[in-house]
Length: 319
Image 1 (cartoon, rainbow, N blue to C red):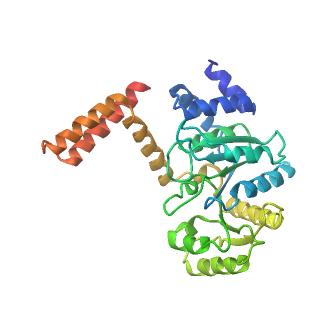
Image 2: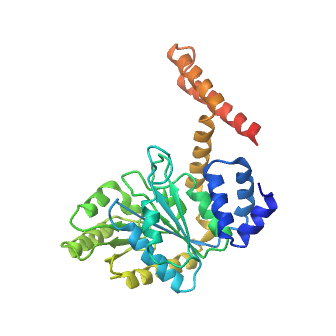
Image 3: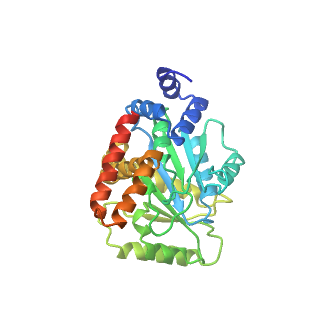
């Protein structure tokens, strides 16, 4: 095992193999890696984080490849986090997206990392935040996050990304579902992909109309772009829209550490609590507390407070 100083030095140098191994340690909840991550956090806050989300089958992977290619051609250092569904057998990423990325012809300078959701709702892996910090600290100018796909409450990408691209497709009711589900609120840029299919222009009009009626209290009004990711059609226009949003973020001091907010801190605290509850000692206490409540020897809130206190003590003892 490398020393703490070695990990930090190699990652800050931008050494991809070291960063890849370190992200694996973070995924496995290695406590020593967490301590190193705290140091790396001090060197983060420079990268532009772009999230690409949308319903499964909307073409997020191919579109993300197009974006990464164009960012790289502009001389930017790019990191990609492709969040895959978890295998029901191994718990690891199925890696379908990674196969598509490797066939994309991207230069080896683009650091591509697949991460499994490991059963987590929200379209992201629980360690995605940590991987973003690592890629940021190692000097990546842009970190591109491709989510596994969203549903009504699955908007975790909003907590991490500075710019969120919501990808929809025509003729499948995606635009109607987006309006109904509330994910309209997370998109900074909307893309109607597979625009060579019937109904693309109609879908774009419906999204623009929905945005005009949404009552969003933000200075930035999202744009809608039509693309065919497989051919690259519309990708250049999309890139101009992306950089326009980056300019807006910079002008309003919304980049870097300024993205951090109360919701993100609560999310991190929730993840730590869930992680602590998964420990064997806490699991035994949990079973005892459930029996206590069932037997009316304690009320649920008192039992929950006892569980929280035990989680905090377990975390303190583990450090």
